Length: 90
Image (cartoon, rainbow, N blue to C red; front, side):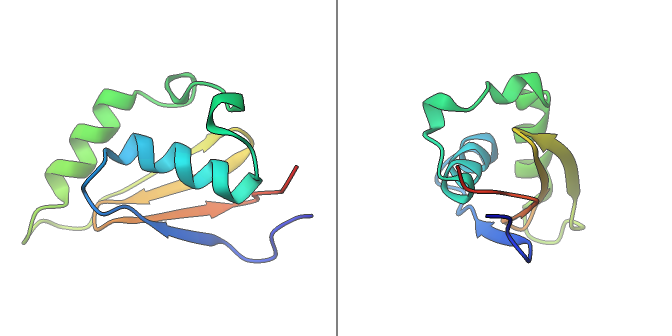
C-alpha cells in the first residue's frame, strides 16, 4: 500500500542521522534493516552525518539533504526531522 502523505520521523541526536534514516525507512516500508541495501550506496554516510550534526547546533541555519534510498525519497533536516516520500509496505 502506498503512503498517501509523507511520513516524518525524528532523530534525537542519540544516534547518528544515518542510522536514524535506515531505521525510519525500515519502519515505513515494513522491511528489516538487514534487508535494506547499505545506505552508503545512496549517499556518503560520513559526509551526511557530519553535515547534519554540525548544522544541527543552536543558531545554525536549517540544512536539508535529499536523496533516494531503497526506493524512498528521503529528506533529512539538521533540526532532527526525516521526511520520507513514496514509502510502501512490503
